[in-house]
Length: 74
Ligand SMILES: [Zn+2]
Image 1 (cartoon, rainbow, N blue to C red):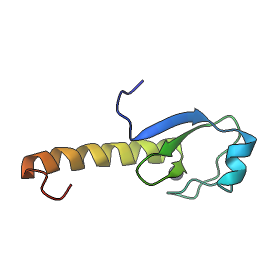
Image 2: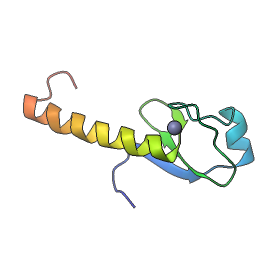
Image 3: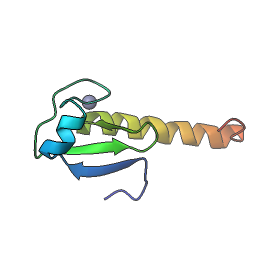
């Protein structure tokens, strides 16, 4: 498992899916019961596996870039 904490991975339950209308907050794909979905701690939403990977990579790149620039704004 990844040690970073951008996301909390968990199995989708009926109750959880009902709260998010069964949709990924990023790509609006359907999420099904039993899928591993990912809670985005930065934006307080749930995203699917493929979006989690994209967002994770993007944030890592962003962090690396911020460090190079001295992280003035973030
Ligand atoms: Zn998605």
